[in-house]
Image (tube, rainbow, N blue to C red; front, top):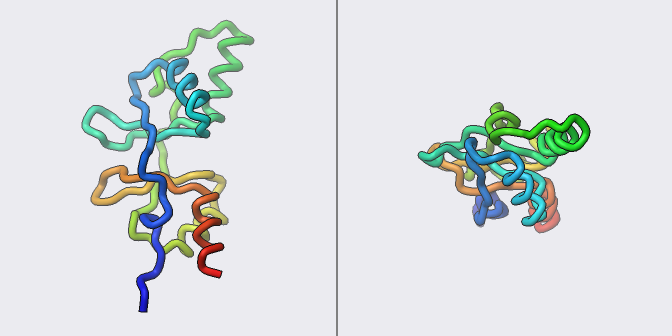
Length: 131
């Protein structure tokens, strides 16, 4: 009998991360250039400390252009409360988590370290593979 598929099997391993000290405008530029909708924020020791989404960035872009607000650091705008998934989580459970959540992606953790990201698309592809 084969092992059930897990988040580890479908996650993106090559994750673009940003730091809390990074200038928010540089972070926005990075998300736009890489065509990604968000990125985990990690500190100097590699610990996950937040996530920066395009929604967070839209607020910054609006305030910068409309209110002439300069911006600041990523830490000023990121979401600090981050839901994560363990790399060994069964893919069906991952799909259920997406159905119950407003999030489009979850950081995937293993032994307290960020090892990847899993998106709604990844979960859909995994469930389609199970058919």
